[in-house]
Image (cartoon, rainbow, N blue to C red):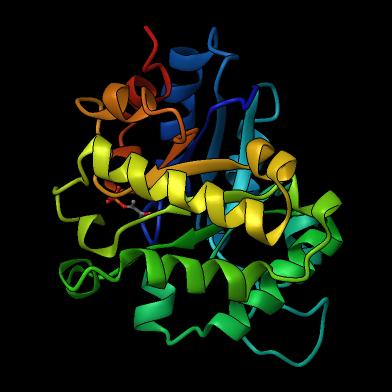
Length: 251
Ligand code: PEP
């Protein structure tokens, strides 16, 4: 059985006081819910504060990026070792905002996935198509190419703990979510790719999230899809009540 995993992506929002206020309101709202693995992926500047304030809870700490080297002369970058030092467990890799705005290539993302797994961080690997690619019927080609380039050659034993986030770019921050059926179709396709890259058993164990305008009002039908095991949530994760309603989707 795959345990649902719902992660907040705070992007470049909040200062330390706002992060603390969020956690203090959020924790009691989800304290009885141990059915869902809950992750807060905070900006680097908030990791220490959030990490300290979630210590007495079952919320896990996530980062939004890392540099694929343990240390070195990489001004402005953060290594997986530094993240682990702060208690980080998950790291978002290949988010479309980094691919599109910062020009991250498949090859660079592959280096990050390798080092994250080697050091014990769990990658949340994001894949997804643009609106143009969807309209041209290229969704599966794009997603498959992103998966193969990030994952081919990774040991099946290491791959089990991976999390994949299917995030159609046209649905991110736009208020337009993919229909649950369309999201399911691509997530089922992703699981099929994973069974080709690794094997059927590993593919059954890897959790696949949907991301793109997830809100309290649509989480239930998204989570009802057989190949969707969670959500990566941007905008709606910034407010403690709204994110708690998403995490508590079963209630
Ligand atoms: C995201 O940033 O990963 C995301 C899915 O954003 P939003 O929920 O705001 O669409």
